[in-house]
Image (cartoon, rainbow over all chains, first blue to last red; front, top):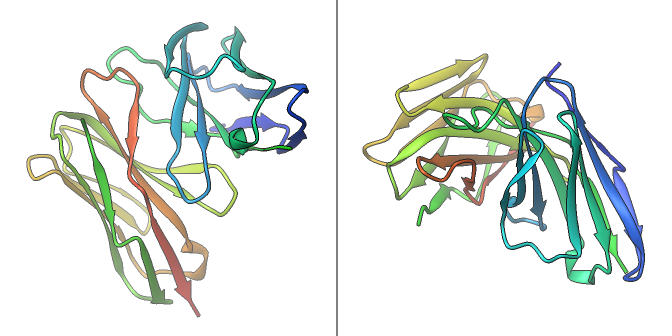
Length: 115
Length: 113
């Protein structure tokens, strides 16, 4: 099973709403990632978790709040977003970070629209 | 700073043709290189991973090569099919950057009947 599952697939929210994106993998991977992708652009790294601890934060605004409750789950909490935050949010996982992360596996993404 | 370029940006070929997608990178101190495909509005599907010590990897009709010294990788697709239509992205992991992939801007491939 090389699957990373993301929910919801689509999300529309107002600028004052609070919502969350969820990501789950059961491959025993210990590194998990959030990427943001705008139309016709490559993905941009947002956060990396290693063994449930935040390893990298690419200077992401605090209106995006990641959480890794256990090794299989990764959440992205959203609050007071701006219309320019509308994008495809991709979750990925890999075996680990030590010695390089190896192959990354991505989910199908959550399409976020901020009104 | 690593820069990854993919040429061409778009490509249209008739079904059955063999084709080559190119990926160039400026910093040869890489740990690995990964090729992905992305269908419109979808996530990324991993196609092939090449470690820096490897020269090529094969999976079915796909073959990826790596020439680290010249900063190039190619993805060869044999006997293309309409189902191969997608955007193909290469991504490079530099040594010392822990886990931050640098993506190319992609090649949008259309295989016509």
